[in-house]
Length: 130
Image (cartoon, rainbow, N blue to C red):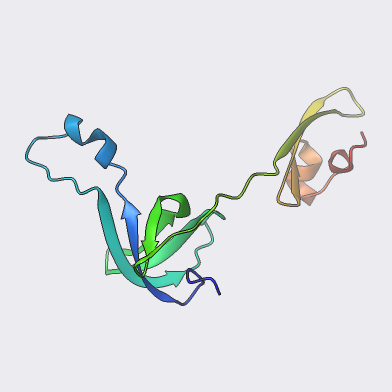
């Protein structure tokens, strides 16, 4: 069972990204090495596969997005996240009229820079043809 699944209430300990540059910040600022957040895991449409979103309880900032690689602990247990390797492949394809297009395939989805893909969301370049 994935403890970071949508709907679970969790407390996460996260690496503070400002910690590495704390000596360059104002002397009166106290920068903690880690931050802890408690909330419910939610799914946001802009969230990447290597990120989670957690409710914050704040009216002006209701959801916090966190990269999974920065999570140190979840509910007191050490995080065992292993980053997903990208399967992204980019090819340059010559069109039938001599134009050059870029076809990108990632996670089973392809995109193309040709005008046809712009309206139809599919084209012959994605299959490797002209």
